[in-house]
Image (tube, rainbow, N blue to C red; front, side, top):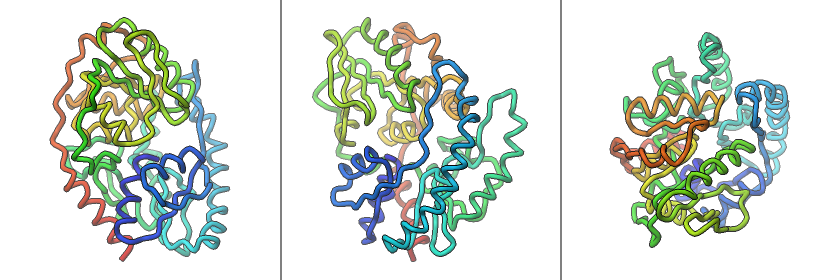
Length: 342
């Protein structure tokens, strides 16, 4: 949801009438970041992880429901197009949202889907299926840089790229906020909790236990489901930050950042020039790959959830990230959007 915000901002600034379609909380979040935008209720597929099964098994078990939802929303889209007189549909990771009558764009950073190591042979066999899905769309936007300095690794590089793929640069709601500075508070540790339940709550419990024994102030930044701020002990606070600038201030105020390696989170941290201690969701192939790739390049530091504790935090030294250019990213996005809308 948040990585679509900079794309929507650019379309609005170009003079286009933009509609946001999503769940209630997604629409509320976007409305706060882009005041005056029109929102419609058009929820997508929502997955819930397991607290004991490997996450790839949970994903496999959810495939029939996902495919049904994809087919269902493909037909619903026809009615939405007629009702709102839509000219272009841009969807993030929703492969059913294409229509032959209008231009359509699929946003994804996974031109290759990672699979667990024992089944790695399946990665190549999935590539023709992914290309067939991408072919249904006018364009496919990959939120990453096209060269060697990139955040997605093999997920969108080192493979045959379909002709309709466009790299849009890193998509971050913080990308243009060059005036953001660290907040008044000075935090030893800032933890960003994201991702599906119950793994988000499991990690929150593990991290909060470690932070209660840490020196100095710490803050845990919750997701949209968190309703109110609360304090736990003298040095740990749980905060629901509803606005991008407030969230960025908290991140920049932290000496050490702890988070899941969700791809959007990685992009947002990179746009702020901040690295982190990243803890992949156990058994979730994408996050495990990204954690290994990013730590292997020396840009982030990987930690295992089962071994995480205060000692892991204490040993962390923040790596230096490659330079980030807001202008380079914006030019890539503007080029793609102008090609789409001309």
